[in-house]
Length: 274
Image 1 (tube, rainbow, N blue to C red):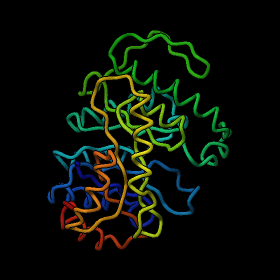
Image 2 (image 1 turned 45 degrees about the vertical axis):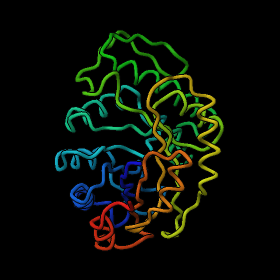
Image 3 (image 1 turned 60 degrees about the horizontal axis):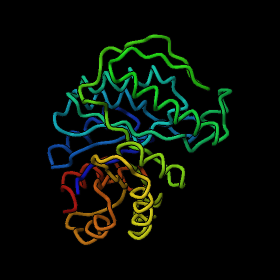
Image 4 (image 1 turned 180 degrees about the horizontal axis):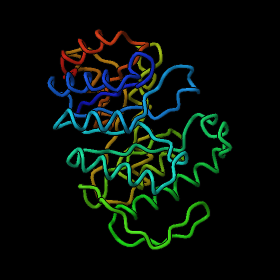
């Protein structure tokens, strides 16, 4: 099990300078990664920090932690723009970036701007967009003519530090999302409820989904299962239960429902649960 932090970068955590403080406290206390949400503020009725500006600030102020999104709704981006953003962040961070990607769970983030709200359409955009992003990261000249996107003889630069690509972790809990995750490098699942205290997923729920992924997976490579959750120092029993279910990354959830900025800094400074 590896231990990271999920920051819901809204409300009191919408200021990137605050998230940098969180990242520095976490890294100095033994946490191995920090991941932020990727949402537009108007949907939630609260401030939300841009994830890429925030991650860039964290990359420049930390040296060891993995950094990424959980998750970015790829259909809201042009694939070439996202590929460029992530590649540049990977260079800045020295190869510490993870791209968490999904189809987006809030249709209003799309329909308010005249973009597709239909989940099937966004799923199609996600699958094609991931192929385009991955090919652009290869360093080869890319020509692509698909249903949603076209590329005419483009070679991306700069390229990510990580080869053959930045790890891609897929979000979502549907059978289709699990099949999609099996084709990439990891699966991200929310285990933290909005009450700031309890878990919304049981270990047996995670184990069932992981079995589906293992059946679908045909690639002999490392696969990560990242789950958000709540813990206190010394909560080895709960961590062990989820590790047995297949979780490889515990992401301690930091959000306004759980407590104040100072309270969250105190929790992270106490270190991972085990």
